[in-house]
Length: 144
Image 1 (tube, helix red, strand yellow):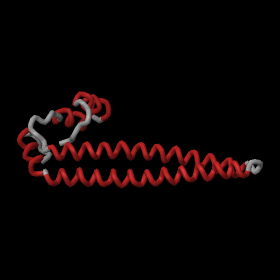
Image 2 (tube, helix red, strand yellow):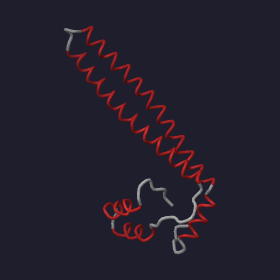
Image 3 (cartoon, one colour):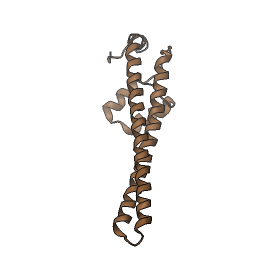
């Protein structure tokens, strides 16, 4: 079972475009919308995991931008001695921004990891219900 955060039609389109022969055939044969109630805690944990992933991805981008700015400040600082004080200020300002971005990244990474663990634990807590649901709705499936 996989929680989708988009319409199933988009996932089917993705399978058709990106998966190869046997894998494509199998996934298209087995994909279906779950009709019964999946435990609400699973969806809540999934949403929290996705939200943490979004924040983490933003932190990665911000860290990359800060690193580029710091490297640029390093280059300017090492090449030009005419404006030593101004270049040093730009360098330290870029370095402080890099440190701040790294701290935000570390917190986002930790939150993302915690959300991932929570989602896994939630699925494990409800695995009996989820597997019973799978056996009920996917009678001919051999993936149990």
